[in-house]
Image 1: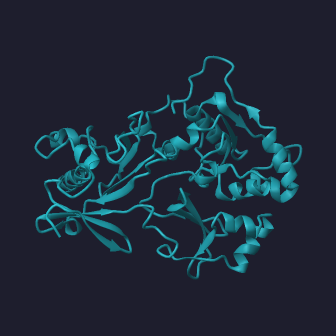
Image 2: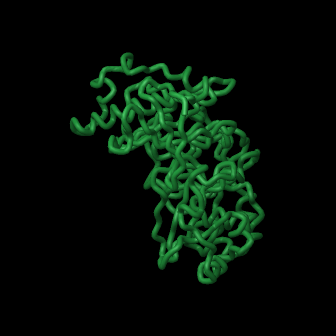
Image 3: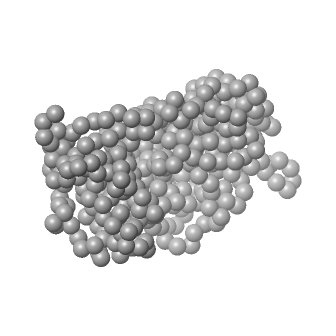
Length: 376
């Protein structure tokens, strides 16, 4: 193979791209042109690592990681901050016609690896780079591990069709087998009956969340945060956002396909601080990673849980999405003292018509005064 030509090595864990240390790799012209931070021009280590609390070995690992992503065209123009997100220019699409900072870039707090995704729907470039020197160097070449949605499959995650037990579990919650199949709900292979909810973007698997029937949750590590059901809102002018995957399935039973769920739990209370910048908004990074999808919506219905954390989540989402285009659902009364908690409770106890009515009667959250607008 000619010198400087990228060599692609297939593996079950991802794609390995062989690169020379000088950056010549056979990558696209756009990628090579965007490498602006060479090793000799990079910022002083003290400046780049001022936010990193690790020891000397960890700092060396972080420097190595930064050099690797620069070889892929990702310009670390600001000091790296492990544990935080940065919005950078995507070397694949150059930010499109708007030349926007569309690449969400994140180095995990430990400095072990970095991951990124371009949130422009026309691009969607994603990958990971690892700092482990034992895996990264081979003679005069740098071996970069780059994983993307293409490499993640149901087979690699060991997913299998739902058992009768799990189908019965959903049936008790008034969720049909047809809805489960359309959303690709599976279960994890093995003794533990863990339900798997695939997170997809443009039909490709980009993540997966698991839960047991007794409500133990976990997610695939090293994947970006996105909304569950993202493809169902890709062209929707009006969307519904709920607080859990089962609530998203419940809305579908009531006729709402244009629905997506947040990937993680609600906050304990509404923050009194001002809105953080996108690169520091780690708890809601999934909104920024789905920005292109959310920007298309003129009306967003927030159907979060009725408890205090759920109401706090609705407020936090509305602050970021813009209250002028947000409506909030008030769930029906269960009795004189309480209301139903979420979409699935309403579906289970009152049926799809009552659930649909609750969504259709959502109340506007548009501010009555000059409150700050959205930051998206």
